[in-house]
Length: 389
Length: 233
Image (tube, rainbow over all chains, first blue to last red):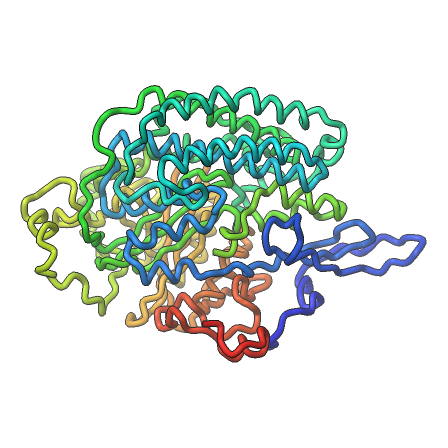
C-alpha cells in the first residue's frame, strides 16, 4: 500500500486461495496475464488479472476505478436539482432509469409524490430504456462471442427508441428526462402513436433475434453451462437483476416494492433455472417482451392531469436520511441520500448494480476457460461508468 | 406502495401495539445525525414563495413542520431490544425503518439479523462523515430480507481511527463495498480479507469523501509520478 505505482500484476491475487495447476506434459507453471484495461470485450476500461493454468482460469481479480469521477463528491457541492443530470452519466446506457431512481429518492426525502400522469410517462420511458439497454447488451454480448449480425439488428431497432427520447426531451443518451416532482416536458403530439408503432414494430424483431441465436449451435456451445451461479451465491454476493432471476429467484423490485406506477400493470417476472449464460440470455429476452407489455398497457391509459407536483423553487428537505431503489436494467439501483436541511445534499450514496454484480465474476469463471471470461463479462451486463462512478 | 409509505405512518411490519409503543421513551435520537455546525436554513427572507407556503399548512411543500422520526416497534425490535437493551435505538423515518446500534454490539447484531431474522441480502455498506462530531463517522448497512420483503438500515457511530467489524464473513458481497468505504473514508475493517483501495489507485493519499477533502483536491505527488504531468486540474 505504500508503493506509489501499481503496474505489477503479481501484486494482486496474493490473498486468494487459488487451486494448484494440473500437471501437464509440458510443465505446471501458472501464468498471470492482464486482460484490459484496454480490451474491446470488457465494455469499457476494466482490467481483469487472470491467473491461468494453460487455458484454465484459476482465479481472477478485477481492477476498477479507471472511470472514477467522484460523482458522490460532486453531489455534495450541487443543489438537488443541479445534481440530477450527473446521474445520467453513471449507467449511460440506461440514463432514464438512473434519473428515475434519483428523482424518486429526492421526492421521498421531500415527502411528496409525482402526479399519476408523470408516473405513467416515467414508466413508459423507463421501460423503453430497459429495452434499449437490453438491446445494446444483446448486440455487444453476441458480438463478443462471435455473432456479428445481432449487433446490426439490435442497433437498428434501438435507434427507434432513441428517436422517441430525442423527440420527447431532445437528447438521445443522457436524457435528463425527469425532474424532481414529475416530468419537465409534456408528451409531444403523437407520442402515444410513436410508442404504439414502436411496440408493433419491435415485437417481431425480438423473434428475429431469437431466431438467430436461441437454437444456434455455436451460441448454445458458448453459453450453456458457462458462468453458472446459484441462488445462494447470488444472495451472498448481493447480485441482483437478470443475473439473480436467471438463477431461479423470482425477485424484481417492480413487484417486490412497486414504485412509480408499476402496481397498475400486469406483467410477469421471467426466471431461469440453471443460472448459466444461456438462461440469462433467455431471461433478458423475455424481459424485453414484458417491457413491451407494460408499455402497451401504460400508453393506452395515460391519465390526464398535471405532470409536476408542487415543488418549492428552493428545495430544502428536512434533516433526515432516505434510501430508495428501483429495478434498473442491471439490477437494484439505490440512492441513499442524507439531508442536513440545506439546499445541497449532505451525502449521496449510489448503490450501483454493476459494481456489486461484477464481484460475482470471480465465482463465475473459476475453472472455466479464458474464452468464457469474455462470455461472462458480457452476460453480467456491466457498464463501467456505473461501476466506477 | 406496500413498504415505503409517504406519510410517517406506522411501518408495515410494526403493528402499532398501543401500550408497548407508548412505553418506549419518545425516541432519544429523533432525527438521524444532524450536522451540528450546519447553518441550516437561516430564515432566508428572500425566498418569499417558500416562506408563505409553510405557515399556510399547504400539503405539497415539504416543510409542514417537517416529518419526524417515530419509534419503530415490531416483534423483531422487541426481541432485539430485550437482548441488547439501551445499546439499540429503533426508529422510523418517512416510512423507512432503521436502527442505531452501539459500535460494541453491532457486529453481533448484524450476525443475528442474518441468522435469526433472515436478512440474507446486504444491499449496501456506506458511511457519512460529520467532522465536528465527537464520533465523526456514521457507518450504515442496508439490509434486505427476501423472505419478509423488508428493508432496514443499521447504523453505528464510529470515532476517528476506530476499527469497524467487517461483515464479509456474513455477506461475502460486502467485500467491495467495504473496500470502497475504506477508500473514500479511511475506515478500517477488522476481518476483511483484502482491505485495499478499490476506485482510487493503491498509492493515493487521502480519502476524498471526507468533508475536509476539497472537491478539486488531489494527490499531486501521485499525479506527477504516475501520469508525468504537473497537475490533473
